[in-house]
Image (cartoon, rainbow, N blue to C red; front, side, top):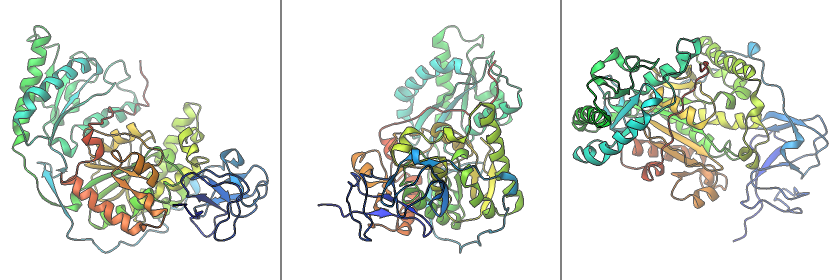
Length: 507
């Protein structure tokens, strides 16, 4: 069946639209409103709806995404070289809490089957986590983990998995540098992720700068195996010690059972990776609808990625629940501006080549689509990288845009489910948290049929509304949290390593 020519214009003010058709459209294509293409335009790329003179604003999402480098004729392809990057919003003049959304009616009756923890948090998985205080022990831990999974785990059927919280930190670093607090609190908070049930153990070398007691609540030494301990005579003794402690923890975790928990016990992390021009019109807005529903149900929802928020921050600070939250948003943007400047870089280092191939001209366009994940609720709080979420509602958790680092930081902040949108496709997954993958385009969902959990591309073709998608995503989150549905990444055991954000010096 031949696809009718179709474009999507997001906002009434826009003077550009994106082509929906899977293979793009050739020169001479005529749309239903009599717009004629002057040249071939690839899927997801922008076409000029009017003639745009040199220096004039290029508008998408009702916002300026750039300025025309030269005259652009109506019906022409606006590829990235024709768009001059605008300056970022000035932080010290932003409105704070001037348009706080009114609370929406509570959403009641939504529950999931979770594992309740002694601290009141709720896990969506029942996992034994083995952390480490230094990368030196990674090889030993890897062998121990293989033996635990093959020899011990089958005896404990109520435990979902055994995982290593592996990282490249702990020694050879400036442990007392001010910014070292970021990787250290990330590791500390990872051990308290709800899916680990409070039964984390640590494998230590013994001589590292980051002493293992710092990674556990109250420095619980009974949960630490130190390889340099004099009782260990040979490699086999080290493996035996790790396995003995692991069996004690597995016995504890095996007693746990799922119980009915309100949706308010969910802590959902939202992020995007391999974004394209459809991200801001299908998958991310669908997550925004789901985010609003989750907030109404009393849950915690986190959105992140500083460089993919920075150029749209003027749309977020008015939504801060009060001026203090607004100032916290500005604090995180300002910190990252300085961090990039210190590395002789700036926000233009984002987007990626894949993002551009998918139709995103620059970071402004990407950011305007990225913040759609936040929905329309008031922003209730702000977390610095790796801080634990302690309040309900919509939270901005500051992280880099790197998928792996963002996922690690959201897990440290306490998310028990993560949902991830992608337009170009990525097999990304996490061991500690189930990652629900949402495609922006139906073509990707078809090609990656066993890696994508939800096809939001149906919104672009009119086969599904945003409201329908948001409600279905909410139900999918509840099903995954209950263990009733397995995400594709878990089915294939796709797990990315923990990736710490360390802006402090390495010595």
